[in-house]
Structures are given as structure tokens and as C-alpha cells.
Length: 263
Image (cartoon, rainbow, N blue to C red; front, side, top):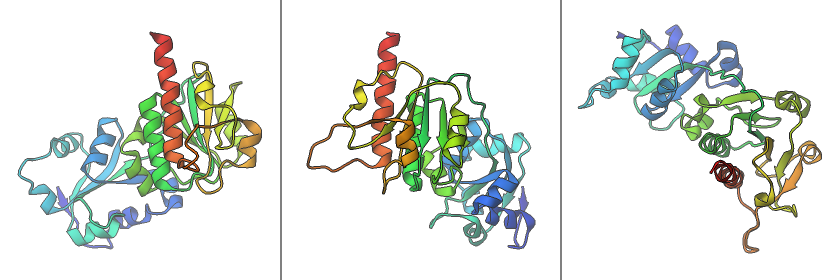
């Protein structure tokens, strides 16, 4: 394991650049922080460019199997000071390990059962939550549509807790591109608090796509034009649910229907 002591080291410079979307796209890399996220990505089969750890991280009472696995696989490992790790970290209190991971590019399955489309979802926490719920509910493709946060920004990666590496992801800059990614004929449903059709009245056993719109402004006009609005009935004391919660509720209803059909 080599030691890096200078902030001008090319690997440290590259890691710092990955805070920017353009740099991530050019390098084909993203930055993962913390034992949980790095371990989840590694167990999902993602390849790493390099890994940085502090001496304090190495001095833990129980050696981490993760480090042995990385070393056995030939992943370049580097020790850095806590101050140097803080320079490349996106968190206030770094956990002692940062990995540069190659961006995943899982293939889109033919005729996926359910597709999730994020339409102008700008909050990283909501985007990561929706991605995690999608994996848990059996969604096979997630499209980060126009106006949506970058799926590989550090905050979305942390909120997704490894979901990024277990589902096909695509980014679409406009609705023509969304339609191209979806391909074929499938009904589109968009969550809209004002809709008359209830989310649990939809037959989710057929191939479909669910659109979740902006937290602040709701779905775009393009999404409303392309989709059938559906709503989650809620008490009048609550105006609406946030994007992460609403999307998760609908996705798990779709999963429930599919389990019932299989039984």
C-alpha cells in the first residue's frame, strides 16, 4: 500500500475533480465514501480505479475483509492523511475510506416490467431514495429525465446506498430522449396529487412506466401530456407527500400486485 502525502499528486487532483459532473462524465468515474457504500459497490461487481484510506481507518481493531479483497484483486490502495482525505471528501466528517469507482453501465433488460422516470427531481435525497426503493420493488430501469439531479453526484450516491450498482440507469436530457429509452408501447403514469385515478386502481401487472415529478413544481407539462395522472389518496390535513415517499408508495403497490399475481 503506497502513501500519498501531497495534494498535488495526480490521483488526488483527479479525485477532487470528481465533485463536478462534467469531470465524472469525462473520466467515467465517480467518488464513493464510507465503508458501507464502498462495500456495497464492490459486492455488486463494480470495478475500482483506486482506493484511499487513512491510517486511523487501517488501525481498526478488526481488519476489514473489504481491504483484503481489494488488495487481492489488484486495486491500487493508498494511505493518505486525514487532512488530505478531507480535501477529496464531500462529507463534513469523512469515514476514512474513499474509492474512485468506474461508472456502472448495466444493460437494459428487454421489455422491462416497470420503469421509473424522474422528471425534474432536483433533491439528491429524494433521487437516491427513489432509486433505492426502485431496486427493492423490482424495478428494472430508472431514467433520470430532464431537470433531474445527476445520479452520480456524491449526495445521490450516499442516499442510494448502493442501489446505483444493482439496476440499469439511463440519463435523458429531454422527453424525446425519454421516449427513446423507454421504447415500444407501454402506459405511462405520472404521480399528481390532483388526479382522480387512484394509484392502487392501476393494473401494475402489465409493463408500465411511473413518472415522479419535481418536488417544488410537480410534473412537467411534457410528462403530463405523455402520461395518465394518478394520485395517492391522503387525509385533507396533508397537502401532499414528498417525491421520495410518493414514488416509494406507488412502486411497492406495483410490487404487491405482481407478487399477488404470481401466487
